[in-house]
Length: 168
Image 1 (cartoon, rainbow, N blue to C red):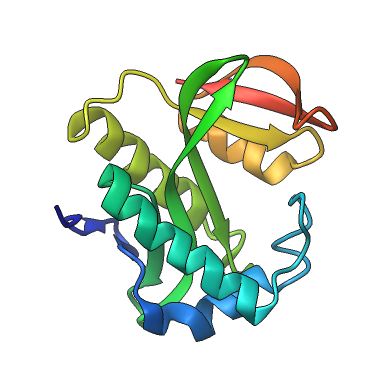
Image 2 (cartoon, helix red, strand yellow; image 1 turned 90 degrees about the vertical axis):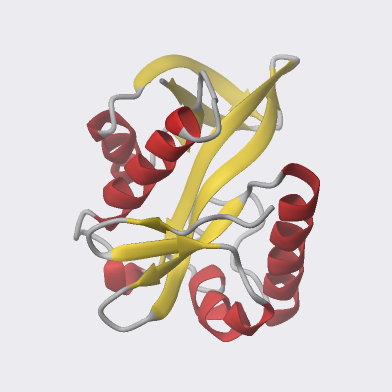
């Protein structure tokens, strides 16, 4: 099964391809992008493993994290999609995203994550989705709230990072 592209006003979400490595290395290697990450900035090799992991998820689940292509310049500017998590022993579908800072403060994270949310409910039949957001990540909290998510609870992610679990 191949993802039909999810199109928004300014972006196209599609499956990752191996030739997305250069653009994604700029995203995942950027310290500001990876500020709220357990692992910090990615090397080129780790970015390749990330893309390979996305390709494996498509094979396994038919869904996963998608490349976000900015229509105006046709560049891959980050990812947005579904990440499968276990929270308090329960399987959850997380909407996850990261965009290059050159594309921040333009409403793109809200636009793409809303499209992923609608696709999950309307096309994939998910009845619930969450976002796990570090307590200090005010920008992502605003994105979740703009998309109708509510702060369900505070938790410790991997028993060490204080997070907020937003859900819809």
